[in-house]
Length: 119
Length: 114
Image (tube, rainbow over the protein chains, first blue to last red):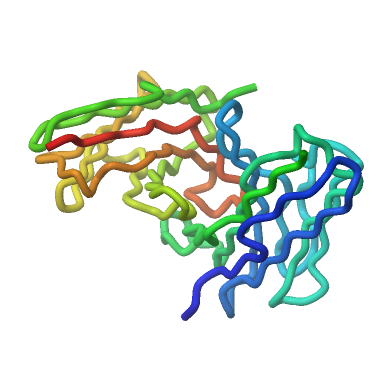
């Protein structure tokens, strides 16, 4: 299994430009998460999907951020327009969510991240 | 509101030492406590997890200690090695980990020197 695949690994853009980050979760996983990591705020959950449906987007900082999951094997996180304060590493993670407590089945598998720099 | 507080922010130990990372939580609904390890340029990866009906769990050189009444848990790394140098995150979840929403601590950057 190739794991969670994210692209691009690095993105440098100018303020005001649109940024699209992509994620391919592990095949068979039914939950997908987008996290943002910064030195100041650590790992923040932006949004997560179960079975391709957005469940909780309360972590999305502003309307400039949007996420989609058109099918079980692909998700995007879009920032439009981007701002310098959006600079961070964005992680996608997936898991197979079961209803059995303590089963360990909900272990998050993270991708390698997309490092975004907005100038 | 930060629901999982982690300390210290950074830690330097010599090889063979026993670094200890502490976490405290507020939400009494949390009942599943994993630790994630992150190497530079990589995403976090699950290291070890504990449920609140046990006070300690060991996996190799890694041990979680759990104090339910104090709402605290900690990670100990026995005989630490330079290869353990990484950032460690504690986390918490309700419903035995079946809840999709995992709350992370702010991370501890560990450096193990020779």
